[in-house]
Length: 331
Length: 45
Image (cartoon, rainbow over all chains, first blue to last red):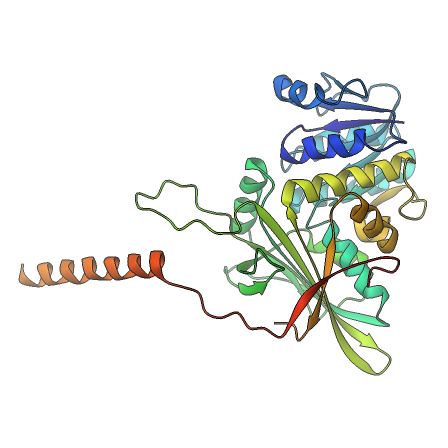
């Protein structure tokens, strides 16, 4: 099985390492607009990995089973269509509203060509959707899913986050989409240590994928912590002790029997490591090198429907990405 | 002119006080109502 990995940045480099270390993946082609960066990723992983001069929008090379996209926001929408037309499976870690919507819109095309598209295969959206599905499986009905993320994977991810914070936020309230033109809706969110507390702002951030994963959901929201300042301040700024760490928190409310329950799951990891591992695991699953879920039908879907949460969390644990549960009174 | 000087003095003092709080201030005590436990197989609950 050959995987074409597009993007050799912070997430792409970690995904490449994970793919190369997956026994069922025979060949990894790495494409990046910066050929030198692609070579630097590949040279420590030869001979299983190889650089290709493929560019988003080009026809798919022969023999590729899966296109894994670790690209800046918006580029996925250019990279994916040729793969879909060729019947090649696509997995993307896009977390911007336009990118997620563009990939989901390819669903009908994918059903015609037999391609499967998994959207939002990063930390959040991505692992958080799986944790929400895992919590949902323990409840009879799910009414509310709240997701929060702190930390970014690299410069492109930070830019995407800044764009997301400038965009109009969207959340599901009482089963209806609410787009508040005013900024706001920030909350202090408690992540696992060493990240701890961080003020998180309401963003779109793949909230549509949460709704896709839980039909009948009444409330859903995604909040991201603002990235650190660009460092141009003329005075010394106190550096956060958790610099470099990312965290995600998923809070799911629902009913089990006659009782209301809240389940809280979280994860702490380097953002690029978590996102790269999730991306590679899903790519390997689509390629048939791993079995972490049911056989997916053609079309586009979020990660919550694409994998079996227990099998997926087990695979991530063997790869060093461990989730945690909050026990006590959620704050 | 006198009012302007007073305003500037207040502004400088406010910036200094804000800067001291930013650099030397400490966060409050986090609310502790539980803790995080790593998920383990086989059911990862």
